Amino acid sequence: MMNSYQILKEIKQIVDKSKSFLITGQYNPDGDSIGAELALYKILSVAKRDQSGTLDPEVVIDVVNEELPPHRYRFLPNFQAVKSLEEVRGRRYEVGFIVDGGRDRTGKVLPLLEKCDYTVNIDHHKSRLASTDTISWIEPHVSSTCELVFEFIDHPDWKIPLTPDIATCIYAGMIYDTGSFQFSSTSPRTHRIAARLLEAGISAWKISEEVLLSKSYAALKLLTAVLSEVRRDPRGSILWSVITQKMLEETGATPQDEEGIINQYNFVEGCEAAILFKELGKNKIKVSLRSRGKIDMGAIAKTLNPGGGGHERAAGCTLEGSMEEVQERVLKAVEKALYGS
Ligand SMILES: [Mn+2]
Image 1 (cartoon, protein in one colour):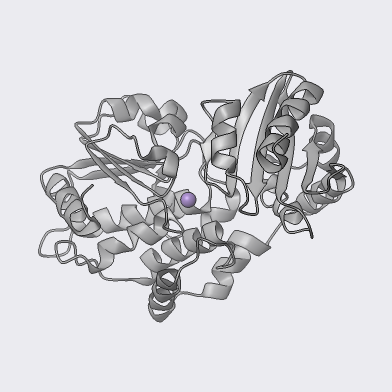
Image 2 (cartoon, protein in one colour):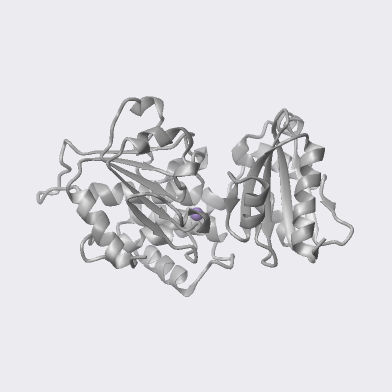
């Protein structure tokens, strides 16, 4: 595989000869995905300026996901660049960027990517290593896709000024994926980049409030309901809970309000595996999996459903079956991985 220096050089060559760009990621973008998308939007806008500093009027840069990003990310600079699929229907782009998502996770944006002349995949998910894109830049040991996107700043072919708007987007993604520099993926480089972002003049505390701390009253009610349903296996290392449609109706919570609930379990003493089962509809259950490091949840998610996946410590999949059937199947797989039977 090429090194990042060479990869960024090749991306620059493609960007230089093109005028229309699609930026996408996971069909339901999280903080890292939207942060990387908007940072890249700004990077491409700067790269496509002429010497007088104005953007070539023929240049089109659209950020599109199947679902619009959660409300909480509206504070991010250039959020207005995010378009709905409806708004870009029929458009054709020369270059498609997929950040933090992989083709298989882009949902209804995939047909737009398939029409692109070139696709560039920038990601830190191990399961994306087999990508078929024109350029594939996958570094699984890196904390976030935003941390990779930061490399555009210093590369000699790009030389993008580190303005507060780019820095804000990158910081948002980094704190989202590292849980404010708490998770094991956090490296010395993560902190060095964070220092550069702070030096660029961002309001780190404000970004933390918006991305990680603020929650709706409905989210608090949902959290309380889910926590009250917590269960633990007899051997004591697996904690799980459920989110039912009834809970969502009673609390008025939205899917965005579920973010972070599973982390409440993951760090309970003795817990090696945390699972959250969410009722999506009749016989369809979304399963979120967290590991403290003893077992590889990405591998388990893939075994349960080839469409699932993620990282060793955080993964997920969607399964068919009743809540009881799915719970039994998933618990069996996790128990087998953890205890050997
Ligand atoms: Mn990520």
